[in-house]
Length: 565
Image (tube, rainbow, N blue to C red; front, side, top):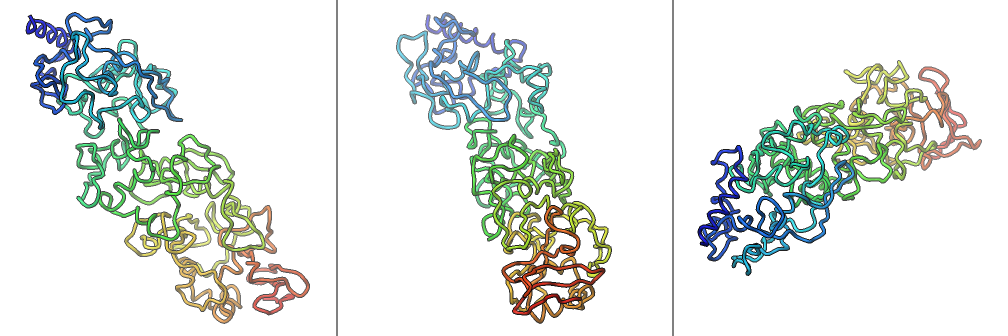
């Protein structure tokens, strides 16, 4: 009789599973879900020979289908939540309750309704590991929510539920459940997936990320070189393209619960590949070995994709500058590594995506509160770079538009007075390609503060050398400057008086709300710790024409009241 009941239970379960599927997909006996003594896994019965009884029985007290032979947990679960989800995720329902009767670890594996005593097992409950989800589902892909057309259109980057008619499908009530991705009777794709997830084919059945088709995280054939820690411990893919979404995300027991990131510390999700063990360049070392760097490791869990464009809580993460679903190799204009990133325009308006590199920088270095003070004490103090680079200013470096002056004879080709530049022309890796090195490009880290590509000495009484002012001489000819082509006292000040460029010139620009073209042309904004008032109490420069002016000040003990040039 027992064998006959076991046979009927197996038949009933298989009829439900197979439906229109082929028998080849129903080889549950060869999977870890065969908990009988004949099962291939280490967690199984010690003597029970029936296979289907652990989930199904032809006669059961449970009202749940299909012929369910287990109690469901009475636990209260912590569902997935994040600021970007629009789904109404609540307590598990439907078939997900059935899966969790084993996978939450609260009910004994051998506790079935058709037996008066539990079946003896090698392990009482699901062992601790990635398959034991527990009752905290906040680090797991959301389940048991209505996947509607409204949700798809509101959330964006989701397919219409009407397209889910293949192996990935919703349950009878239109909800996303565990069985949308997993078939408990068929492990042909591994992890009981209904579709093989090579190149994230399963993920992309529902998720259609903007820019993804062009992204290096989708297309790169780079492999792990075997050095250090395996960047893909939870996948079988051997290239970036094969792992795709799972380069950064983990659908179950994710280290970073919000957005299902592999690691809780946001930058670690990037470091796993961008340490020269997968990606060509070692970006991680820029953040960990350079004295001046963007402080991505300072905060964890503060960044939020839906936070305001202007950074009101000071922090920075890799994704503030890079969209991992969009980024490609190449120069940032923004394109390449900066494509698909939001920013702030010169007028202070939100823009998504940013159309200029400086717009990305303005998110933190523009109107953001709590910025650190300038390392130079200026006559006109201004830390808002958005205001410093306005093209209406008395003078500025040409970030947002060409410069004001048509007379800059020191410029080195290909620079002209019609040129514009990027923030990263000055703020960049000191060993990157811009500095003639082989390191990664970008303002990740530098030995020269504040994140400068080349040396720019600001200390007074600096003995002149081209290296001391290498940043200036990247674009401006030292021969022209020291030859006094625009100011007849340049050589005397820089070489003779050992006065740094920084003492007189403010490299970003002077806001039109604070300065004027008479006193603040040519980026004049004195360092007040070095430049003191003249004997008349004045401290100012006055422009009197092309390459001409006069100064009222005291510097290095010399009174200018005024001195004309």
